[in-house]
Structures are given as C-alpha cells and as structure tokens.
Length: 105
Image (cartoon, rainbow, N blue to C red; front, side, top):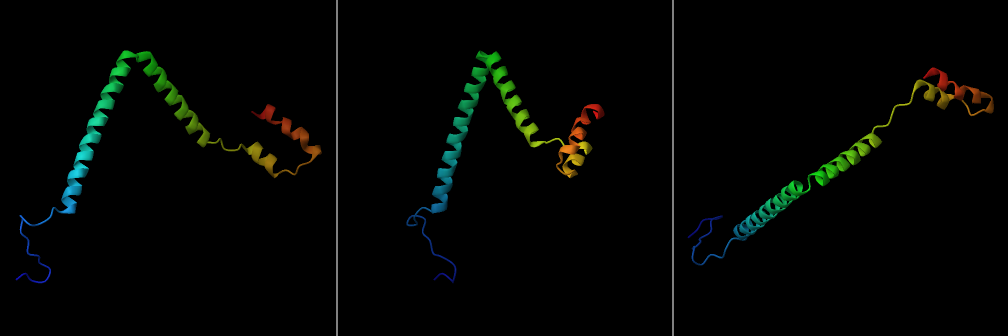
C-alpha cells in the first residue's frame, strides 16, 4: 500500500506524461526552426555571393537609416544664446538681439 504522496505506477498501464510529450513536441519544433534558420542563412549567403554590390548597397542603406534614427534621438543642447532668447520677453524692441548670433558663432 502506497504512503501519502506516493503513487503506485505500472509502466505498462501508465498513460504518457503530458510534460514528456510536450518536451518532445517542443524539441521537434526547435529542430524544425533550426533547420529553417540554417536554410535561410544558406540562401542569404548564396544571394550575397551572387549579388555583392546589391548586398553592399543594402547594408549601406540600413546603416544610413540606423544612423538617421540615432541622430534623431540625440538633440543638440541649447546654446547659451538660445537660453537667453527663451528667457527674454517677446517684444519687437528686442528683435535686433536675434541677429547677434551671426557675429558670436
């Protein structure tokens, strides 16, 4: 007689464990995904060898797009003169000050 928490099992009558079948299915999916990835990597390498200039142009385009996105995120800090403009009240009498940055830069 089994004690509390113990189960009496018979290998011939025991149904397959759900975790075991799930592990087997997951292993099959992983194997299939690895084969698919390897196949696509081979196709990509073959295409790069057949069309080297197109590959170079595509890489340059991606680099340009990535650099543009990076520069969009990095804004130039305001200069001291820009900060001064922001603190000055809006007045037509002070419009001559806005032309000073041509001489100071």
